[in-house]
Amino acid sequence: MAAPSASVPADVDVAIIGGGVNGTGVARDCALRGLKVALFERNDIAFGASGNSSGMIHGGPRYLLYDPDVTYTSCLDSGHIQRIAPHLLFRIPFLMPVRRHAGSKLELTGLDAFFGLYDRYQPLKRGKPHTRLTGEQLGRLEPGLTGDLAGGIAFDEWGIDGARLCIGSAVDASEHGAEIHTHCTVTELLRGPDGSVRGLGYADRLGGGTGQVTARMVVNATGAWSPITAALGGLPESALRLRPGKGIHVFFDRRLTNFAIAAKAIDGRQVFLEPWQNMSVIGTTDDDFYGDLDDCVATVDEVRYLVQAVARVFPSVRDARAIGTWAGVRPTLYEWGRNEDELSRDHRVVDHAEHGAPGLVSMIGGKLASYRLFAEEATDLVAARLGNGEKARTHLSALPGGDEQLDPLELARSHGVDPVAATRLEYRHGSRAPRVLERLERARSERAVVCPCEPVLEAEVRYVVENEWARTVDDVSRRTRLGLGSCGGMRCAARCGAIVAEMTEQSPDAGRRMALDFLEAGGRRRLSVVGPAQARQEALLLASVRASLGLRKEPQEV
Ligand SMILES: Cc1cc2nc3c(=O)[nH]c(=O)nc-3n(C[C@H](O)[C@H](O)[C@H](O)COP(=O)(O)OP(=O)(O)OC[C@H]3O[C@@H](n4cnc5c(N)ncnc54)[C@H](O)[C@@H]3O)c2cc1C
Image (cartoon, rainbow, N blue to C red; front, side, top):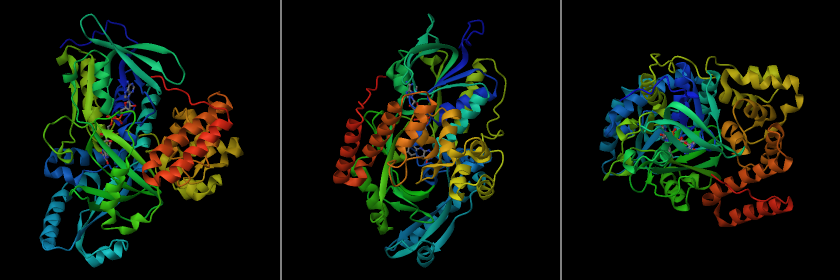
């Protein structure tokens, strides 16, 4: 294949479409290798699967059965991710209880042997070896576990905030010269007379207007949207085939357990309840998805399926307060005739030269846990095409905030802020947390807690608007978890909207509108867990607020 000609002038070396973990990962890798990069994301960074995953930087013991290479690469990359972003990783110790039945002893022996095999991969990700437990030990560790338990297994995983991981990559890419354009939909792929892809056209959804960027290479990292993106350049449907898989999670107020609990669903699938940040999450489903990728929300059926499974071993989940759901679509590699759970989680870099479109590369499949390796593989191909001989440094160079571990209590003391707020801030920003808190010396008012559930200080809201491309309340929420607590944003969205509007030089009405948009979207995602009566009340309240303020809902164009 002919290399893109260096003599053809282009605005950038590489244009990347998609701001998920793979797009931001490639942007960072390319920028660290000295390439000129522009990234375009239609919504917000981490809007897609990357911000709606289970957030596990794991090896996935399940994949050991039919895809051991994926377990190996995920564990290996998990080790790298831990080194570059230690502040974002947290341990998730799992308990897998086994109910007593005729074959339970044999089942436990099988599980013990199986996790013995998984233990061989654990050192790659600094994981601890598994332990076989008796029913009594399980009950002592997690008193909420019920039923006649024959015993169980304890094993070790890691969790992460996927959105913060993507933001970290985007910030680092930008600090190495990349341009990051959020809320910009790529609407066309520019093709030269020889069929080569030479750039893209985009529409700015918030700012208005359209534009074009010429690029020597274009990377399609749009996850489940990838076939749609490839079609923008006139590529045939057969050029990229995926098997999109919808997954949902339900989240509950506060941490219900100390350990994550693996449970079997009615169809034998493994699901889980995990303490995740300051809440509890149950997940996840994996169902072939034929719907609208831009409108993917949890249904009542999916929620009941998960609650039923977890309640079988941890019944009090039924009494816990569910406060929301999230849903995403996996960009799983295409395969016919296999059950969703058994599909490979492997990834693939597709060079569309083979489809007559040199200059375009797509990234499909993959996992959060092996994103860095996937990005490295895609960047290797792009760099080779561009004659760039630099090697990847993304496993050696820390993500922003990952270079030094700070003591949050010391931060709280030295800046006079609430220790919980400082701890959460340090989790999200690592060694950059002082940059947020230094704002308090210039403006004491930024000490105000905007979101009491998380909690989030006004200083952090302003920091993410100034430094992390947050342009709406929803964007702030994705970066800080503002509005995701038990009040559903009722106590913070309006204030956050006012701050964002003021900082982005918009009217107070625009601030109120984005607050209402955020609350309505959250309400819609809560519908399947709160039931029709509460949902009706919420909708009525928000509609009356919107009407009393004389605000119309803005139509979404692109
Ligand atoms: C429910 C669920 C649970 C999961 N759990 C785990 C887990 O625990 N561990 C793990 O390792 N992996 C997990 N995964 C898999 C992992 O999340 C995905 O493989 C990964 O996030 C895919 O990243 P991506 O960047 O390819 O896609 P995405 O994150 O979906 O990003 C694609 C982006 O492209 C943008 N886009 C689309 N069209 C355009 C356009 N025309 N112009 C500009 N931008 C566009 C979208 O807005 C989106 O932000 C899970 C996935 C799901 C859905």
